[in-house]
Image (cartoon, rainbow, N blue to C red; front, top):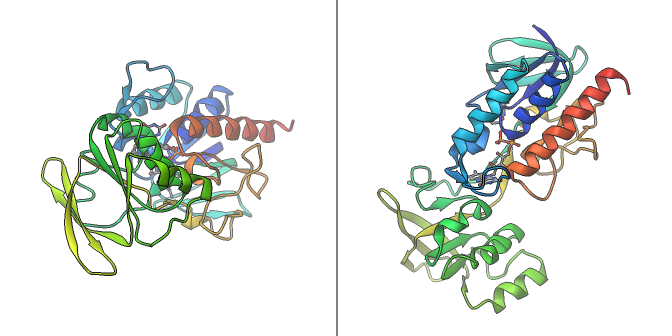
Length: 302
Ligand SMILES: Cc1cc2nc3c(=O)[nH]c(=O)nc-3n(C[C@H](O)[C@H](O)[C@H](O)COP(=O)(O)OP(=O)(O)OC[C@H]3O[C@@H](n4cnc5c(N)ncnc54)[C@H](O)[C@@H]3O)c2cc1C
């Protein structure tokens, strides 16, 4: 099968690109390895995406984006991209191969996990990887943030807008975050830092009850009752198959210019897989639009 434009990934970035490219009458194929919607289908209520003043459930937003892309002729197939043949502009998947004139990579990123038992089953039931998204559900409650980098510290500060108490659990005796952020955390009355500590195990059945934390120096384990646990130990971009194909940074994020073009002229990238500071639906959608318009300009030679 040959298409003008292939988009890898059917999350918000990929679906936005598809809306633009298929509406511009370029034959468009989206290849998605799991489920249309990407990370937003594991999200419950989305309250910060414009146009939905009452909020919208993640899976519903995904369905609407899919419907809009299909309306203009986008085709979607379920398959996993394994390789890109640069010389022949071929996209090689687990089950087949496809040719294209331009490619948009929108494979997203997955929040890094602690990899503890119960972590997955309690995600969305007290455990979250996104304070901007879920913080408001913890008004006047007790939450903990895990991590010590900029994101963890910024998100701990953000959570003080809602929670009555925010623990910051960090495995070392100092934070990695920028000094100005550290100062704000140290001064904040709602934040208590628990140093040299890791999460040993997670407790809860239907929803999170708390965590057992272990002091790395004394070896002592104590139970910390919690309503919410926010894990910010980094993101992992889904770009393993792009090594030696396009320029990546040391963490695997795709480097793009301000037109969302990669180091290869016919390959564009959008969304959470791209090197950028903020990872939200609105920023993914913005990238998806830019990448699509750039791909269209590339194909039409202007
Ligand atoms: C729990 C949670 C709650 C969130 N809540 C909010 C919120 O309320 N508001 C907000 O703005 N943001 C929220 N976010 C962040 C938001 O979901 C992401 O920023 C957004 O989904 C990024 O879109 P994307 O299209 O770049 O990537 P993704 O959504 O990650 O989609 C990428 C897609 O590519 C597919 N893919 C990856 N590799 C391949 C491959 N090799 N072949 C084929 N397909 C592939 C994946 O399966 C996935 O479907 C939340 C995130 C999480 C985890």
